[in-house]
Length: 191
Image (cartoon, rainbow, N blue to C red; front, top):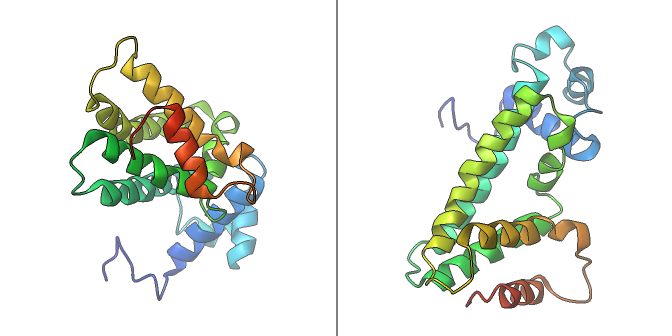
């Protein structure tokens, strides 16, 4: 255990503050979550809370970055050792879809707050999101070229479909794997 990566079986007070803030941001959104709300959730007064965090903005960026880092880690682990470009992209898409449809995932609630945050925060969030999307740019660019297919537009549309799944997917009719198969079929990605 070290200070940057504490033992999660024994969370530090700072970990508790971050977890409470993440839950509140996911439940209420950025605008409706105050520092006071976070403090109340963990039993700390404002002054004590600032010992653990710089600001609401910094905390939101930190949580957003951690969610994207975790998603990227899961995707990279899933494609490790897969050589065929279409199979790599298919695996990455399946993992991202699973993350987006996981009720415990923070990526969608945090991404949905882009318009609610101050411009200075939005710039940081967009920069991190763009860095995350480079993973998909590399996967798409590794595919054999297709006449008439612009790789950048293809990637944007594919990610838009995957990232919006939590808005339209309803459990019951199709399983997550069946939905993934449909999306991969539409985008002609081999699995």
